[in-house]
Length: 631
View: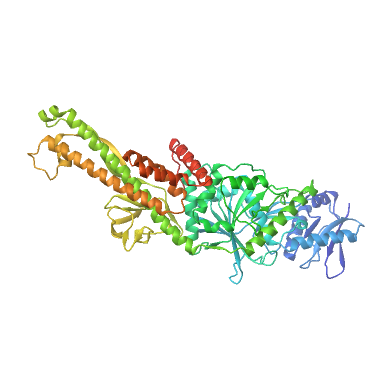
């Protein structure tokens, strides 16, 4: 069988090239997809043609021998037809469409074909770098003269968040249904796991899309993806994601404003679980109520109808988001099937594409019109919240230490009373007590890039943790947020910066079983007493020490309560400690304060209570399971 090679240059006449090949080689051409190829650079033509020549040179029958007989130009299209068959005008029109839809993406060099067909699916290969603990993936070159819009995506696994990000990127690039091409920027699960294990980066990824301004949108895009919330790695990982977002907002080359927060939800959702409330509250605690007008539900798997059930479910858990001029909830619909094979059900797929395209048009219009939430003021507020949270954590540890000391004194008193005669007759007679001491325990942490250093700021004089967890921005204690005017705002003695260290360990309260003689007890509790003092005075001294500790404990609880109240916008970081404070006030018998704290707790909205339930549930599970290291 003979085959003709047609070479068509759009600004010249049709050129005919004849090539005699065997049926085997004709089958090869058809199976390898060389029947119709759009090319922009002639070098590619020779490369592909050379592959063909090398293949057929292995055949037993070649009549005549094949050589590189090919007329090429920069915009040539070559394809193969059976002998004596010329392309019809309709096929030329089809070829023109194929060439146009393909060639307009030829300038995107950083892509790999991962699936041929309709559509052809490409994996984009953006430039990767780390902003401290955050991964940044940049497609194209940033133009400072162009405007930019930033979106923060939130959503559980299975809602279609990754597909929505890919859809938004394709829309930005100007990809249309008839182009029969699709681009992915989100790495598939296997590649992402491999990449994460190599770089040890966090789950927070920033995608930057530059160079496509005026294709569809008049601005470039920055997309912040937050996978991992509510995942299987425990509550500690959820907290770290919030800290890493905070790091992103504070970093000089990070993100400094947000145009929209997209809550990605499936259209079939009728009831939202506590996990979503936790996700929402964790992130919104970084912004406050001013962000409300920038929050919008992005409804996936939609049939184009109003998602009444989802909107009611959001209202039920008190998640507030943007409203239009008629006070109706702003939301956008998507049915992202553009990447699916179009050999069957093309009518349904094209309808789904229209739903998504309209949703994208409306959403990007919203992005253009909505005022961004500036993060400069927010960062100042967050820095203050860091100090408050650090104080709360530190005060809680102080109270727990005092309680352990009280228990030790109580055991000593009981032993003195029980073994009075034995200790009097035998100076070496010992009793066993739980002695309290401070120990150092290693924590996960380390350096990321040139900006971030995750560790703990601790006071070596007070032997207290002044900032942990969440101390990532400071390279040394003097730069930590808890320092003010050269002194610490957290530790007991408010020690100077010089008394502090930043290391990958923390102080922990521990007890150990020890044997003590009467002399040991006297040495510990009667350092300023004379040896003539009797055993009775020792008991009195122990009682006095207990009273002093109780006084200190009451003082710390009072401080604890005031610090908690300072956070007017009650967040999870506050609520997690409310039950601890209520319990201690009950032990103290202060019913008035217990009532006030209970009122404070009951005033929290349904959404935050749901988030709190989820957090306590995760903490409870974490306590039962072995602790996992967090990267």
